Image 1 (cartoon, helix red, strand yellow):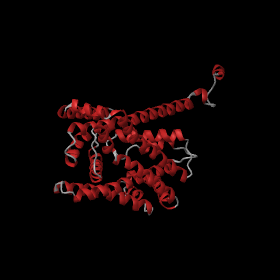
Image 2 (cartoon, rainbow, N blue to C red):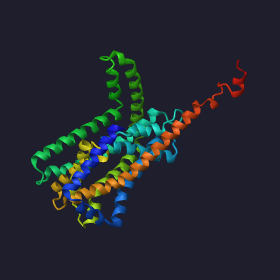
Image 3 (tube, rainbow, N blue to C red):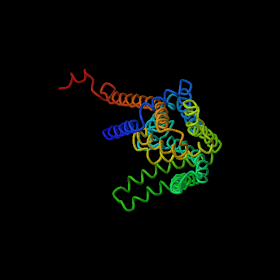
Image 4 (spheres, rainbow, N blue to C red):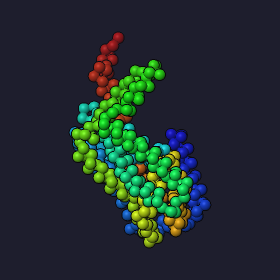
Amino acid sequence: MLQFLASLGVGLGGVAAVLYFVGWRETLAQMKALGALGMLSVLGLVALPMLAWIVCWSVILHAHGIRIPLPRRIGAQLSGYSMTYLTPTMYFGGEPIRAFLVADKERAPMTRVFGTIIVERFLGGLSMVGFILIGSFYAIVSPDLPASEKRLLIAGLAFITFWIILGFVNFAGNLKWISRIIRSLGRPIPRWRGALRRAADKVSETEDEVGVAFTKHWRATLVVLMLQGVATFCAFMRPEVFFRFSAGHGFTFSQLSLLFTLNVLLSFFLWITPGGLGTSEAGLIGIFRLVEPQVTSGAAVAYSLVFKFAEWLLVIVGVWYMFQRGMGFLGRKKERMSPQNDPAAPTARDRTREP
């Protein structure tokens, strides 16, 4: 908790520093210029992907024969999103929380639920890579991008694409590389051999569930991939919507592609504070200056903060749900452990008869 608060403090300090250097008045003016309709459009671009992700997960759960009430699915999705958003990574981190909130020994085993989450997140990564490939093509052929930054872009793209392809080969072929690696660690560490073997068995079960999604449930997988494309397209169109309403300025398709690609790489490597506070604002100034010099630093910061405001609304709901579920779980556990609910516990009458 202390580490999180320290990271949050660093992020807020970074935002304050950025606002100081770019001018908070210009930033505030750009945010006001967005207008009510523009703000509603921003909220829509944040809410629609969340709706698509909920539907994606629901489709996968249904294909695997897992029935979970809709309110619990929505709450778990929001909680997982919140945890991912607040941890030092933009694209993963909240998956265990999501699985824990819906898993049930009889109807929804943990390994099966976690397998559905991996499939959903993995297909989201495939969709993102598809848009990145388009953006990278425009970036590489663009004469405005310096050669050094082109090499950096190619390296970052190769890094992300490599892991996505590696994961696809592993899961689609059910090669179980992850569980094999975990199990092999028991040889050099004999003391942990038993624990690592048990962990590898659980991971192997999850890999089986993921493999089933790419073979037996391939139709549902294709549907989810298309829905993930809708969610990714919303992120792709963010600059166009914001600056169209706030400044009447539009972007070409190649500019949007480049903005999307550079922003993904920025989020992947520099999301080191809760919500990327401070780091993303500073990085977006450089990205917009590179792609569209007409966008001022204040406008770039306003763009980032407005979308962060909309995202934090979802984060607050997710944290609230996670807190409520956690408190409810602890309350039920305490009730089960209470002597009044223990049939073996002596009653007051029994205690009076004791010598």
